[in-house]
Image (cartoon, rainbow, N blue to C red; front, side, top):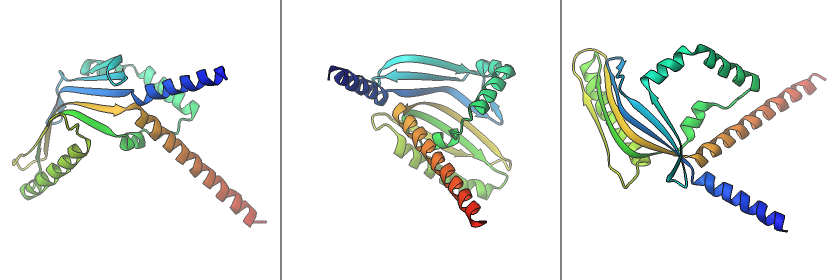
Length: 203
């Protein structure tokens, strides 16, 4: 009985830690100007437990990305390992399904196309889309600022500046991965069932 109690207590503690763990991403001074990204930007990734206690921190800069890109053998080893272990998780699907909370946002975008009428048409559409996204993901206690400015120069131009703090709950990532893995297993089972049905049809 005592063993069951301790087991239940341990599971409860682990569960509480998981639901209170979140990933915070801070983007500072990220600028994209006519196909060039500034060298001074910084992306910091923090892992918090109990929503406030930091237990991990990773800072990414342009120099670190360049050094990592030069180490081709590391990328090849990671790719090789993923193929060997047969990882079938679609990371694009995970990113699409997780819920991101915007704690702070300062986003400015300048857009221009070769067609001035098209530019005038796109600006309100992009502004509306951004407003909907920010409204759904923003933290009500903080203010978010974004600007969409047209550039009328008869050429295709996209410039933007981004600073912000974004939070993702770990439980959302785990839940999304479990759902996707279950979906993959169901799809594999259905394909296997279909193949067996076709086999029987030839008898």
